[in-house]
Image (cartoon, rainbow, N blue to C red; front, side, top):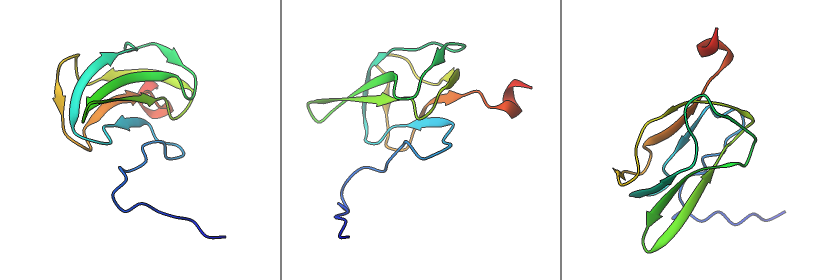
Length: 93
């Protein structure tokens, strides 16, 4: 099987077991759709980034509880910036 990997594509943020959501590209945080303490299902929209005249919706990588939203609407974020962190068994104990 041949798989085409785009070397210029932003890094994937939905790694299995990931407990945080990071910005795939630099941009402005346009919307924050969740709050700390909120339970979300996998693939639920969390934040929207405006970059290069596009809107990018970042989604929950897993079912869980939002522990922290690190930025507010209007903030400029760099690629790789952590935007949302999830509670883990270690942090909730």
